[in-house]
Image (cartoon, helix red, strand yellow):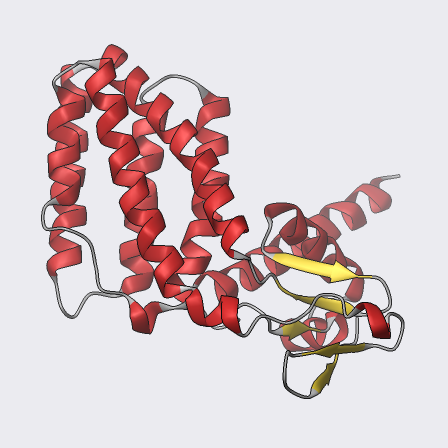
Length: 252
């Protein structure tokens, strides 16, 4: 029995290791949208068995980072414009509620902490030599921290999940990134710190919508060249065709 528990714990740790390794490659753009993934190849690259890698793939599908089709394969998920806008509709609802509750509940210390956090985010954004992986992570932690100050763990978890998808899309089209308004986050925190829930709601909605318009603009090349998934005329053939292009074989 002890040996069985030890084996399960080891498999769980390997699955976690595979999950975070693949997730990081997706979030940093090393694996951009549309790239096919082979469980066997990933397992060999990471030096991990197929079972933990398959478990990691399942988690990443649940996160919305991968998509699979029987007998076709698995790839990094390619969102449609509707997917992006839909995610931002959800994000706007979550973040605006987070802002309202922050305005109502945040302590003086938390308000000071978040303003300092906003200064850090804006300074990183203004730095021409910034590491964008670090910037987008700090930006996500800023929004997560606002949610944490509401005292609602479920809201924190939901905000984090939408931010994972947003970070993926931000990295996918990094070369088209043209930034955000100067001191964008400090101005947001000035409103939230004033303690008016209605004003905080409006400010956060505007903040999120600016981000949505920027991501949709940057993802346009992916929308135009998106793979048909799956190609209904070739179900079961193991081929995914690109519109106007040649096929690509996927193996799971």
